[in-house]
Length: 311
Image 1 (cartoon, rainbow, N blue to C red):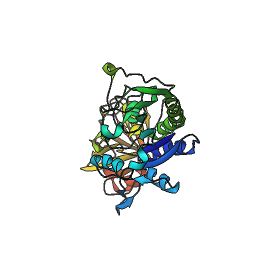
Image 2: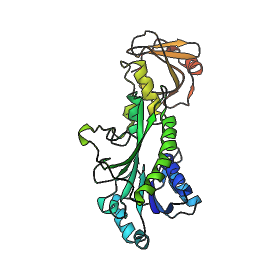
Image 3: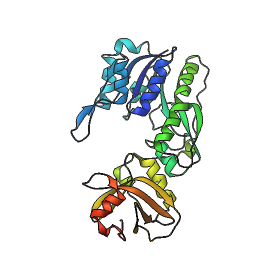
Image 4: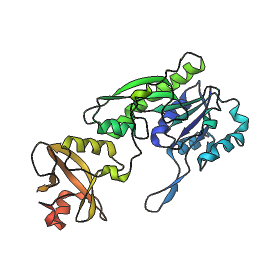
């Protein structure tokens, strides 16, 4: 069957790779976001999906706006679209108009890493970790005009370990989701799947993350804060303020103990910070305007760190 793939980040690239390797599926083109400036020098950098497509000689298209999609399919891809069986969307990152969703014979298939209708929206894996869920799922669905609203084609559960990180959960989602996507596409092509309407009355939602989501509320428990660290690394990261500067954390853990929320205690090569219940512990910090460094090195220039109060 012939497919056009929409996707942008590394997570999407793994699904594209799996479909490309499947002898029964032909990737006719890739649609991805425009190159973005990255790093301090703001060098324009292609998406992981674009890089993979270019390496494998798959045509790549990068419309700048939602409104550019239909002209693309009525223009450069007009001769291709009549033979396309399905569009596949994995973390494309932009809305696709209904006029485009309806173009392929079988419709547009989307991969959403949650147990739909739970966690509709752009950050479902982060939400599952923050809420300390025991399991989530990968859902393969038909896209319609509403967000993550379309009927389910297939769904497979994914267990969430006690100290799961976003990175490790993404790997699990790819491991089960990539073969599930290929299998679902082929079954749909053969008429072997009956789409199942979601229970819209039980739907829950998650939002687009912003930097403010990483700000620590020291009145929460250490468990809650640690869950956010695991969900929000590397972005937006977990941070607080001290002396008017942002302080970002890495290499964190939690321990039992009691300190006033936000109060810092320096202990050799680590600091402990009080929370609503338990201690938040780190050996590395990055103070705004400085390089990340060990707590012991930072303490040499900041004698007032011990007994400080993070806000």
